[in-house]
Length: 263
Image (tube, rainbow, N blue to C red):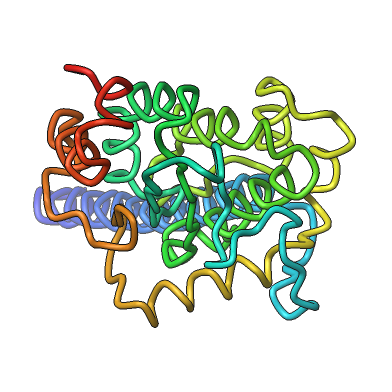
């Protein structure tokens, strides 16, 4: 074999080797893309499964018959405290609203004292406009339905359960608490197990929808919103002192003054 022939043979072997490397590279790339697609598909399946597991294990009852909580006030709210309290404080809220939790953190201790002293009657006006922020689980509706069920059968546990829901408030944009977790919070708040078990019936979901609609019709555009004896509170919602001053002023500085104190 002469030099020219050997050169051509070497070049041929090198070309074949290069072609083989290119073939292997294409195969590796194709396998990588396929693996990535499979991993993506599996991830999507897992996410769907997790989200599904977080959802209520029932269908929505929003289109069911309207049933009002037995203790509902004339204004369509859930009352907490003495009916003859000199000041009525109406709170428009959504149980997934982070600002509502901020209001709760700032004012719940003071409100609890006023309720205990008979100085203030709190009226809860649940809304569900943040249902769209719970990945399809309708958390705002489910939580408010649970509070309405407690108001219907064990009204003396409403305030403690309301506070527990805010203490364990899920982050906005997540599926929220499951029905089972909501029921567990209720039981830990002193609600009888049979009442907590009734949450999944969704009996008061149509009432929650109606409550949301009536708040909107009344000009409520966000939560939390507060009315004191029917008048919109214009002060700092996140300052206990600001709310106390407004309540004392409304009560004439007497009935609520002792309850509010300097908190």
